[in-house]
Length: 307
Image (cartoon, rainbow, N blue to C red; front, side, top):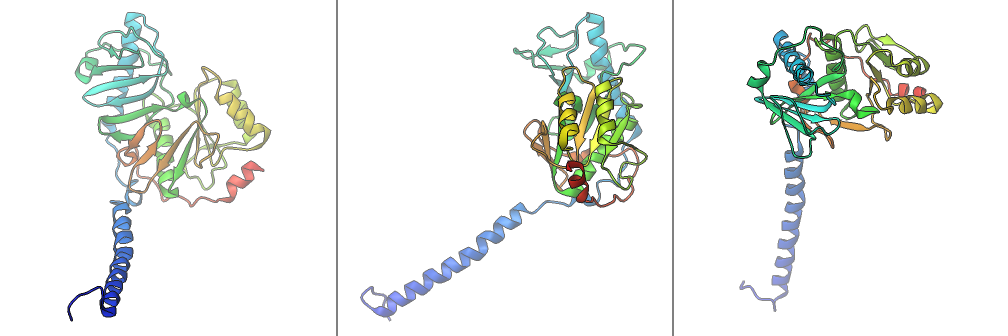
């Protein structure tokens, strides 16, 4: 049969062809999209097995102490940093602008970032007594420029973990592990509220009221880890205390919350995404010891805290 729009059979064949094409398209397109969105690997399943090299933390400690030492020698008040990226070049994103850095640092025109080559920092003489300046600094992983360090207390409020539950627990374990074992933060108290099953080892479990008292006293730097941001008057008071300028406590929530200052969207592929830090590979931050199998979260804990 010759094709012609004047024949009814031609109309029928055209209609059937269009229907078959659209049906194939409806199947193929979602399949392609689902395949492209699928995680490259389930890093959360094996991320806690490798153990970090002991020298890695000491190398970072040398960098942090050189920051403080260079400022001390030049009598420059160091404003602290929100983020540091440690690679062949060390970059500090400062807590407040400073346009006159000491040697060997260079600054951006607005004074918000300092940078120096790693080799130059190795030549900076170190002071004899390390301070508690970096007691709440932790490595969150790495990006394309190097290892990403963050001072959690600079959030001036809660840092919340969102996304996959297993990935959130893995990120939280890395943060607590570093505060306990890194040379610049060892001895920093870690308090937990609503964390069950010894997920972070022998942590000091306290009530919300006791956490408020510790943060209010601000006697030493510290890390508070909560299952979820507490509700009620005590929770509001805790949030207010964390916002105080110069406060030395950092707070981590293992659940998302609208009151959080920073939110890390944790993913099973070994990355997290946040507005503040972009895409970071949390899987690159190894634990100091092989972690035990984590206890599953109990969703009722959040409701208990908010009661």
